[in-house]
Length: 371
Image (cartoon, rainbow, N blue to C red; front, side, top):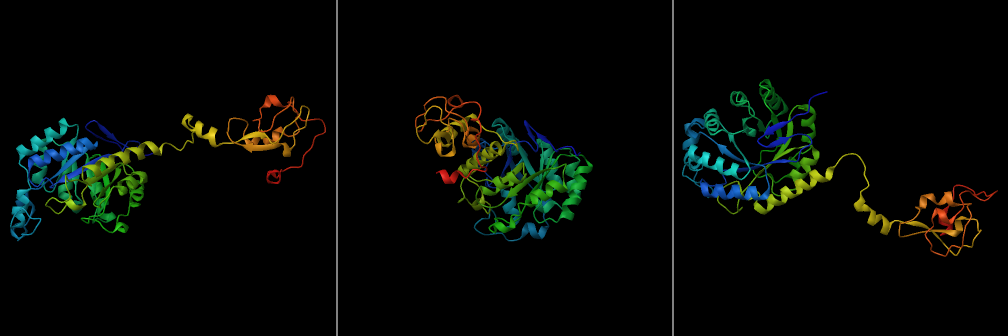
């Protein structure tokens, strides 16, 4: 029997039986401003999430000169070229250290997506406890191996990826015995077409990668899909976050605002608690409802002492504090030990222990004919 997967990160243990581990993707929604990033961390901690994630790029090493210098002058741009735009949104090593310390004081796990090997080195100096591998990097096997060698948990999104490509990345990561979370993802920003979410892939992943934690990374608006993903077996959820969807930037309009994140955390907690086990229980808290709405066997009319109990003498009425209707046939043929008033809830003490001698009744009984 395969050993159940476990990822330990900070004070959290992620397993098949754990609550949902929520990674809040801040990305570059901080707009290059460290004070905005701090406010976002405050809101994430207030909502009760477990982790905040940023994105780290070494832009000149990552992009070709042509892409780095291409025109990028539009409403969501922070520079006239794509390189200027990306550089504006990058934090320095000092700023990263400040944000990591700030997040950890708030009780949050702090880590990042590394888009290149130089960024891995940067994040190693910072001391992140885990790495995120973006969907578009699943085919970057040199980077995957470079990260896996660090021995830290990897959260791998799988948008744009075929099973063959995911298998290849998986084999590299598992070669180094690194804890792995594979996230079902559709890399559309935002995802408007819900038929492209393919949440049932989560079940496929659970069978295909039994030694990995399975999760969901969503780029849709709203909070329902992470809840469904958890029910299907995802134990990690990643969602983009912003302070205000009207802020400048391409990711804000499909990101969760603080209230939305709070509601998501609330609902995921309710799902975790409400799923329970396959054991059917009856709770003490249910008894009042059973008493009020359930039924008891009652005397349909006045019954004199010595009367043999027959179907036409019985009725079924609320409250359900007495003998339940399914015991009615066991009362037939017994003798009333005293006078019983109409509507009395019958108890065994009202009747003889055995049926009257020679009593017989045709079975099954059609109780509807005695209504």
